[in-house]
Length: 458
Image 1 (tube, rainbow, N blue to C red):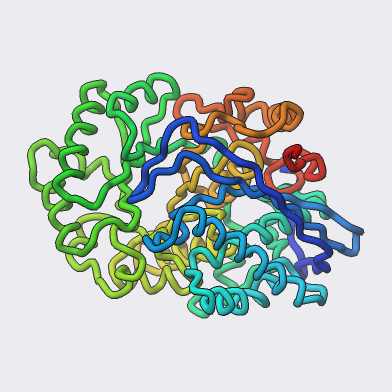
Image 2: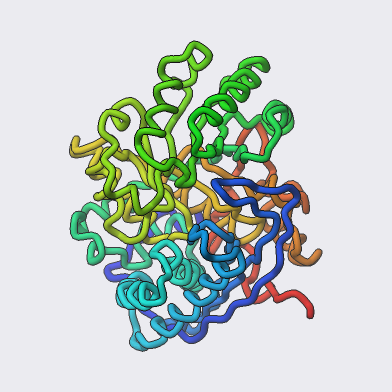
């Protein structure tokens, strides 16, 4: 760590000076099928923020894939229209952030704009999950700039609450619980990789993945058809057992189960059929089985007693996790595309609920194809700050390494993070995990100068 222990009597304030962004096209190496969507390409957003502090001006950057048909699965919208909504959210959020023109903390700026961004997006029928995309990107880039201004790495900066995180958006928490959570975080030396197994991926690729990378954690996509999902899971379990892999698995339905009865059919087969005898002990949790709108009108009942369920796409605002907990869910996903502050506050909630005996709640690390470079580094640092032991990292096998980045940019990232990357091919997954020591540098998990990250040539 650049600073082993950092504390602020009050979080530093700044004035936001600029927000600028550009996109690069990203072609997938193979199709990624999740839920009802099959993705073969997507634009990647790159965003820079400049702030003015009492130490002068500072620039920070971030990146995120603008995945079609995930933030909004409305069948009436084309894939391009769902991406266009994310572009609109960026514009709406930028106007709100600049309207707040007084000096404030990083979280203070976010909190002051949160309700306005959400309300403006609702008026344009943009769902809450998509509405969070713009602020999430601004907040990441601002955090990078703030950490650089104070010569702090992200782990010690967040532990010292450089952002001024408090309970104003989460009345179920206290400021003390948040501070206690931040101060107690000890990131691991390595993060284990959970390999995504999409609906279009061949069964035999599982053993090949294990042979090449040592991955023993697998995230398996579901279709929403209990009979088809059980038949496919039977083949997957047989393949993993045939190669004597001591695996752990999660299941992700991406909102595809139409109702609780269909979900119960699947879980009943997993609990009672001989071919799945060992699978429930290896299954860690089931992610977002029901459509987001149905999630909050459907208590899980006895299903929530037999399996751990988490919400992902259903997270639309800061009140999602408490509402889900009351319905039988145990966890919620951390994704930087949904917002670093949601992630941090949900982590504090899970710790507080577990410590008090209210519930054994947890935070799970999921991935929306974070790409090599800023995106995957920042998301990995966020989940490592929580102390999460394993994380879905799927961008490294659905996309060819650094994809459309320039040779100079690839060299800069590989030089700054030699433990994290295996050259231009992308992540260095060894023995099933990632070394993250080089993410401990001034800034938000990146040793590359934000100013050097440039738009593609026309």
